[in-house]
Image (tube, rainbow, N blue to C red; front, side):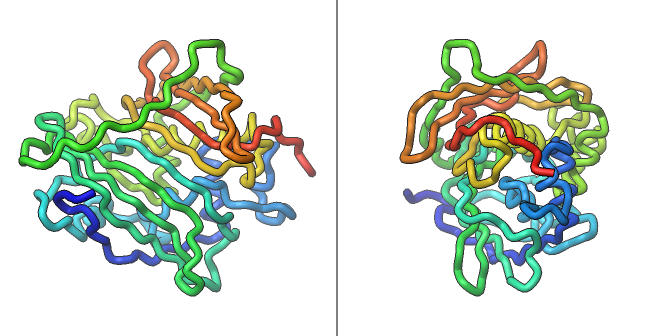
Length: 308
């Protein structure tokens, strides 16, 4: 597919993590003491939670706070307008788990390699930038994860670009869900999650959210995304990282601190090889859907049994 910016490759970013990063991430997305293999570094099956690669393009190699706006402005896409990163929210994400991450990146050089798949002008509403990001071990060339995602630049459209293709929909089945699980968020939820490396001020201080019409601070869409993935893996996949192959959702509406999140999930019985397709959606209790188009490919084995 051709179009403005399509095929542009960002300079590779070196990324790194230590066991403490993995522990913080697992704690921040809701892993519990029943899953010590995500929360205790000396557990014989200690593992990095599968969606952790999503944080690495934000964190890079830093163990310090990152200037989010400066990092987003570092590289511009040729052939399209320069967009304001102070008014950007997540559109959707799909992540494929190709190889399990080691507990730490020490001893290897990992890179986040991103290319533009499309830049779409949605008129008055804004612009969508779709990218593919691979986490690659530079020495071997092994790809550990592949993420296709979109960023929505609010009210930054009408520049004459292509409208973009329709996205594929995965509607929730019209029947009672197989599993429902909940999370009561607090105003501190985004303040903890941002310590993983996603320091967008939108999730810490009210001014950016007020400018974008959200009424103040909103919780990271990727918090809800990662929390829901944890719940699916816990309830369907025995909390075993090897039991999820692919995971995706669309960010449909914002979540505020203090909202209760409710995930409904359905087994479909549709198999792709050894993997069953799961559908899910996340709502704010008593309110809107905040994650739609939810889909995962999993091996369904039931809840985990604590080994310690």
